[in-house]
Structure formats: structure tokens, C-alpha cells
Image 1 (tube, rainbow, N blue to C red):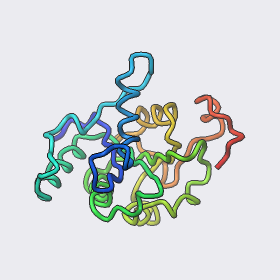
Image 2: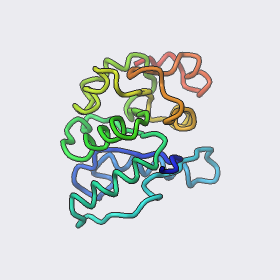
Image 3: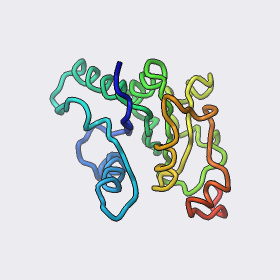
Image 4: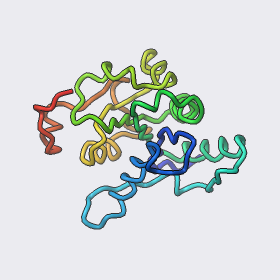
Length: 187
């Protein structure tokens, strides 16, 4: 049985390793927060806990490594932007494996939002694999803005042992106030 302590981060890489040309920049932000001494943000990165892959790796090798990383994860942060739904390759696989095989919660993080109180309104951004699992309520998802405090709280709070209550979970006005996020920015 895998030791499940890591957070798996999924994002649409747009077929490039250039972080400025894809949603990889948000993954890099998470790792920067973790590495910065003056920032209180802890991330046990599942991508660093398993074998590495190279761009030239075969699809089977990539699938094997991604599956191992997911099995060693307590949760998944899914970075959701306008491009995420366009990924027809790895993001759908990662979502399906995380939910259907590993039974881990998804922390859907939206970079262009300050505050989320109606996650169903964000459905046009969801890749089909996520939309299907939300519709059937098979995924347990907390929807948060891509902001340090809500992400920190969700990563520490939700795991395979402590799931969000539904597929459309979100933080209350009081939670946002405790994060220092003004509730007047409702979206």
C-alpha cells in the first residue's frame, strides 16, 4: 500500500515545457511558495516523490509514472483555466485515475477568480472528465481561487481520509474573511 502524503498537481501543459506558455506557471508558483522561507505554505509535491520522466518518454512510461504519483497522493490540485478543458490527453487521465482508482479529492483552483461561491457557474471551464464526475457526484471537489491561503487550507484539510462533502463544495464567506480575502469580490 502506498504512503499517501503528497499533493498531486494537474494542469494543462499545452504540449510545451516552457512554463510561461502554459499553466505550468501556476505549478511553479505553488513550488515557489513552498520554497520561500518567508511564506507559510507547505507542499509535499507528489511529482518529486516518484521517478522522473523526460519529454521523450513513451506514453506507457508516462502513464505508469503518473499513476504511481497519484497512488502516493492524498489529494489533487487541479489548476483550472480557460485552456484546461482543451486538454484531451493527460488531464482527463489524471482526473479519472485520481477519482476512479485512487479515490482522492480534487482541489479545483481557479487562477482568475478571487472568490468562489457558485462553482457550478464555472462548468464551462471544466474538462469533460471532471464535468462527468461532478454531474454524477462521484468526485469530491472543493472549488477555490488560486490564492495562497485557500489553497493552503484545502491542501491541509482535504485528503483520501477527509473528503469535501460534495462535488460542488466551496468555502463560506466566513472562511474567505479568515483568509483575508474581501467577500465583496463575490464571483
